[in-house]
Image 1 (cartoon, rainbow, N blue to C red):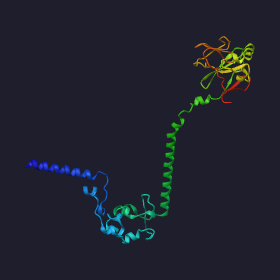
Image 2: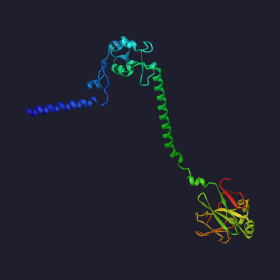
Image 3: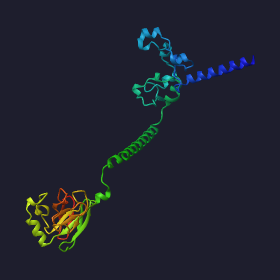
Image 4: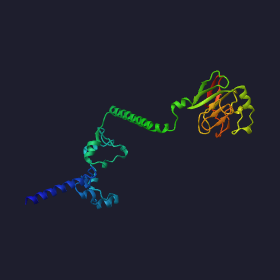
Length: 297
């Protein structure tokens, strides 16, 4: 007997717990007929009763409405707090963002309406203070959102941009000074070594007298260095595989790449070896006899 009583009690407890879980599935208490809270599975999932009176009077969209809820309350309290038609001692204030012209009291149940919507009229000064506080808060939130968007997009903007150290070396002025014939000075520009090479009179005679059919990559010396003729300005990177050539070496006494044996003349033009092109001439301009400007001219 005691065992059966315990089993029945346990079964009833489990059924009540399951019923409570089913009732709280949505996390809220939706209303059913006559604005009552959900108390059963049928209230939650079954259709409410239909009203033939409402169906005949208002059409099929009102068939689930309760006729008793359509009666207008004309008591003194409601008339007093109807604004602007009623007395000015009170007003209706919609706090959920619904404009007054679209306001409909049937959106809320009576308890919520009386507690949160029906409010006494506040002085104009209080309304102004609330409006200013609202504007200030909205301005701060918009500014904070813009700031966050800025910092979120900055990394995308910086992708692929050169580093600041590289930007600082894009255009430079190099002081070369006085160079003796066959002397070479190295300048770093955009992370690359630049040779400024002073050519002798004999070398100038040879490079100017070289015909184009003797060159692997035909270029005249005048076209490569039109301004300061005795000074050759070239990027010291071999056009074969990127080694650094040695000045005053090779068969033509210009530049020689020790990696694979490319020979360049004093103008930096390839004369023999695997290199396909002449040494590149960087964009430059001579500001004076001893100062060269490297970069976009």
